[in-house]
Image 1 (tube, rainbow, N blue to C red):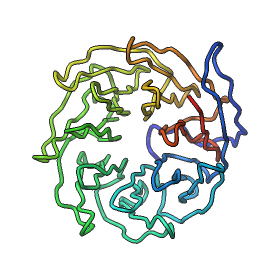
Image 2: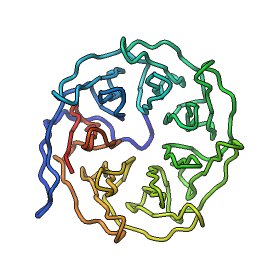
Image 3: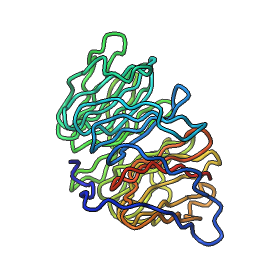
Image 4: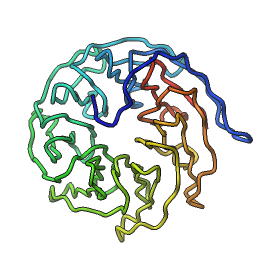
Amino acid sequence: MRTHLIALTLLLVPSVALAAGSSPRVVAKIRVGSQPCAGVAAFGSFWETNYGTATLSRVNPATNKVTKTGRLGAQPCGIAAGAGSIWIDGYGTSRIERVNRKTLKVVKRIKVGINVWDVAFAFGSAWATNNYDGSVVRINPATNRIVKTIKTGAQPTNFGIGKDAIWVGDNSPSGQNVFRIDPATNTSTTVPTGHPRPSGIIVTADAVWVANGDATVVRIDPATKAVVATMKVGQLPQQGDVAPDGTIWVPNQTDDTISVIDPQTNAVTNTIKLKTGSAPFVLRHGFGDMWVGSFRDRILWRIRP
């Protein structure tokens, strides 16, 4: 299991209580596979990987029902869409799995590095982070072959996609840098955050938001590569996303909350409290809402900002 994930101990039935004066509301709690890990909105559906049951759930956003389930390799998590397919990282298999979006069958398994952490599709390619190898690979979707291996060092984790760069987090014990990859040259440079384990990455038009292991989020100016703001969030913040209203949502796995950050003020303006033990992990936007899996149970939350 990924080293920083909370161990599965007790199956809980979650509920939600929002902070006083808040506006977000839960519109659906969707039962998927065990340990829902990450999701993506694509091809008219929302797709969620299930780490514990090694499955992929396809959800109809109009009905909030799972319409099909596909089998994957061991411990799938990161997911992306591109070139007409769904791409999934197989953490337990060290493979990227390319899935047919209609049949949900794996049509290609691409061997990458050890313990592949995340997958992205950008700049005409599929990308994978190899957590134990300290590298990022670029895959040509036309051939399903690796065309470039980029050494970052440390333990690369989550992707954030910008207009001209790919940003990558790091969860190595001593790491305090994120990595900026130039897709034109396939080269990586380090960008300091000043905080340990900067793993989660969210990229907006004018900022790179990094969730760190010390319960902070930093805002980096992508032009100057400087940290311009630091915000205190919940314990063990993970991979978040941008809401339709432009706010930054960061799930905090240990204290079962979601921090909502206003990019105009660089302040946490709302805290969404999930049931104790739900362990929200990767949060994504889609169909006007925010979607996050509870890593300790089988629930995919749909929350309307």
